[in-house]
Image (cartoon, protein in one colour):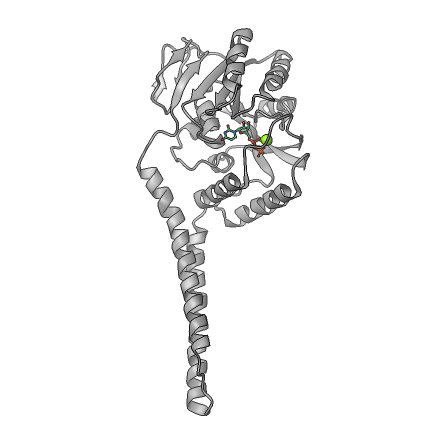
Amino acid sequence: MKLTTESCAKTDLLSIVIPCYNEEDVIGETINRLDMFCSALHDLETELIFVDDGSQDNTYNILKKSFFKYNNIKIISLSRNFGHQIAATAGIDAANGDAVVLIDADLQDPPEVISQMIAKWREGYDVIYGVRVERQGESVFKLATAKSFYRFLNRLSDVPIPLDTGDFRLMSRRVVDALRAMPERDRFIRGMVSWVGFRQAALAYKRAERFAGKSKYPLRKMLRFAADGIVSFSIKPLRLSIGLGIFSAALALLGIIYVFTVRLFSNNWVEGWAALMLAVLFTGGVQLISIGILGEYIGRIYGEIKKRPLYVVSEYTGFDKNSSFFTRSPVDNINY
Ligand code: UDP
Ligand code: MG
């Protein structure tokens, strides 16, 4: 949906999109750091788009206060918690910039790295994604699982997805427009951006520790996110079930040949319920795995065909009357 009152042609506006969920401990500091960063940029206008992803703590109030203090802050309040990727999508949708940066609210991605991204963008790159060369303050478990996940995903995926990247990235206007045209629900933004193409460059940076607060990605959400990454970008798991099927059928065939041979050429043939049980359990297992894989895809098809909007916004704050912005949500309240 395009909300337009006259569009004004501005050159070189940088939008910074910051999804926030229960970030009251850190958000004040994030606003300060981003403001310092923006004031140091002389040749770019900036807008900071905070997306409050249904926080239950004080995040919204802190954002609202800073809206009155700074003149480049915009706030999108979602009607409930929709998850990081959707919150980021709501922000990217509403961004008007010639370049859009997506950054976490917890200062793990240092805002200062954005200047290097801008330099690369000026060189003509469309996407500059941050690659984490070092991650501070993460558990050994998270580091190890993240590392093997990205490698595994790349083996499966039909589009190469750069290793060790998060969502911290700068995207040019044409990449953002392409993203806006992608309606899918299971959003794995870093993969979607790879799919869009254009000139993409990597930028190595040190991922800092969370400034304050706790990670909002518990193991359950991480697994779900990993499944989204795999299922949205590959149909290889479906082929895997064919492979498993062929494997177990071949095994069964060997078994049959063996059984017949012993029966015909010896006196001690297989008596075996044990062999039978093994075969039943094995094929049963393989079938259940395959049905589970099918279920993952069918569940997603079901989600897609309902065609619900990706998010619902309860309030847009600070959006300029004279500019246009894109939203996928029914709009209830716009505070200019
Ligand atoms: N986030 C969000 N909605 C959620 C979970 C997280 O908007 O449901 C935001 C969160 O506020 C942060 C970013 O997404 O700005 C990344 O989350 P987090 O730092 O918890 O993830 P991690 O860095 O531990 O992977
Ligand atoms: Mg974080």
